[in-house]
Structure formats: structure tokens, C-alpha cells
Length: 337
Image (cartoon, rainbow, N blue to C red; front, side):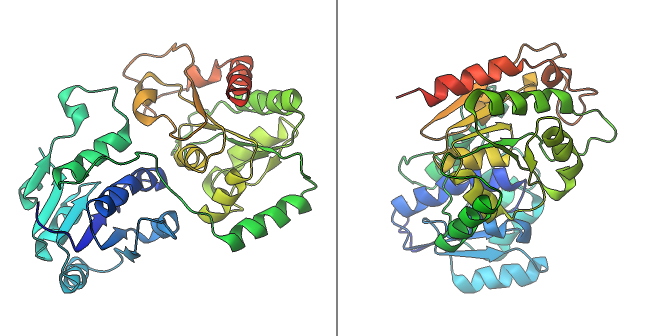
């Protein structure tokens, strides 16, 4: 492998969780000896990478293709690793003249990469965790094995501000539970199982004698409020930035979340985290939360195997989830040594 001086990780696509799961790639590049590792991401994901201990800088893909490529060319990167390949993300390092360009194989634009990696799922692998699949790109660049747990660092000011905010909510040293009941989906009129998730929140509050805070984005606010009101919980959906949500999760005694970016965030912060994977196509082995104290709930699937989150008509698998089962998994997790 050529000597690394400056390395670029292009992780601009997908959601916040996808970007978070790409952070071990930066760790691997550091471990390979890169003296500077920079991430290029979409403006909406800037906060996901802010303060990451394995990054020396976060650049934004916020201009025209040629303008961004010129900036990258001026930085003289030795290697670029693209974790979410699109035509644009493949063109950028090519136009920037990066000598080693690692990205996904079997795509029309894959010829723009000079080291191509076939995603394991395309070879029938349904078991390997997604962070390991992303680390295949780092391995192709000659990087050593590293801890695959994603990383996020809550800054001191945000942590202090969130502690003060929690106190203003009347929550003392006993702590609280965070429930993240949404996935940021465009439901298009499909019914989200609000009553079931409200029952989960209620049982968590009763069993652990702790207040439950319901998180979510502004677009999920109505659903999150419905869940919270059905359980005597407090809704904070749309009231936190990504960094503030991280501080909220970091301070929680427990996080229960449907498969989502906040689930991965809570887990990597070390918060005991239970992920709910309802659909057959949610693939919990691939997308399980990674962290020191995590567990997964897999309901019995009443749905056809071809139902995906994008086309499931009624989310019956999640609607039929037994709240007692979730609580039992939480209890087992919290008593784990």
C-alpha cells in the first residue's frame, strides 16, 4: 500500500445513521498511518461528524460538482474511500485526481474507482454487520482491523446545557428513559402503530419508575406526541439538534428505539440500548445497535417477507409487538454484568 498522508472519507448519502456507521472507516485510516483524515458529507449531516476523534476536519458537499472537486484536488489527498456510492460521489475523487479511489463495485459508475469492493449482501451475506461491510472499503485500501463500533463525541457545553434542560423538566438524579418510536418514514397515509408504542412507553414508565422522554424529528412530531400522550410521557420530538439528542441519550438510564439512527447513536455512546426490529427485512444482525450494552427485540412476523419499510401497508408486525416482551429484554439488559 502507498504511504498515507492525507485520507478522505466521502459519506454524504443516506441518513444520519448511515453516516454514523461509516465513522469506523476514519478510525481504520488513522490506524493505517494517515496523518490527516477528512470527511466530506452533506450539510444536513455536519453535526453527525462534529468533534469526531478520528477526523481532522469535516468538509461539506455544498457546491457544484466541479467546485467541490477543485477543492479536493487542492488538498492533494492520497486516498478517498466512498462509503455511499452515487454517480456524484464517484466522480468527485476521480475529478480531484485522488490516486487511490475505493468504492462500490457493480455500479455503472464503478469504473471511476480503481479499487472496487463488492458489497457482501450482493453475494448473499445477510449476517455481517453493516459496519464490517463498510470496513471492507478500508481493508481494500490496506487498513488494519479496528473496533467497528461507531463513534460520536458530545461536547462539554452541550452536555451541560442538556443536564440543565432535564432538570427544568423536573427530572432529578434518578434519571430517565428515552423512547424513539419513529423511523423518519414517509408514511403516505399508512397507519403507524402509535397505540402499541404508547403501551411500550407506559410499561417502561411503570416498570422502572422513571419518566419517559419521547424523541423524534420535527417531521415525526405528531406521531411522537401521540405516543407520549398515550403514556403520560414527555415529547421532545423536533426540540433537539443532533448534538442535543446525543447529550439526551448519553444521560439516559435506558434507550428503547425502533431501528433508526438514534438507536445507533445511543448504543455507541454507551447507553443501554434496546433496538426493535419488526419487519423481516429489517435484518437485525446487519443493523443491530453496536455498543457495550445492547439488545434486540425481534417480534413474531405476521407479514410477508417482501414487505419492506417503504411498502408495508400497515406495519402489523410492529402493531402486534408485546410490550411485556420489550420490558423483559430491557430488564435482562440492565441486569447484565
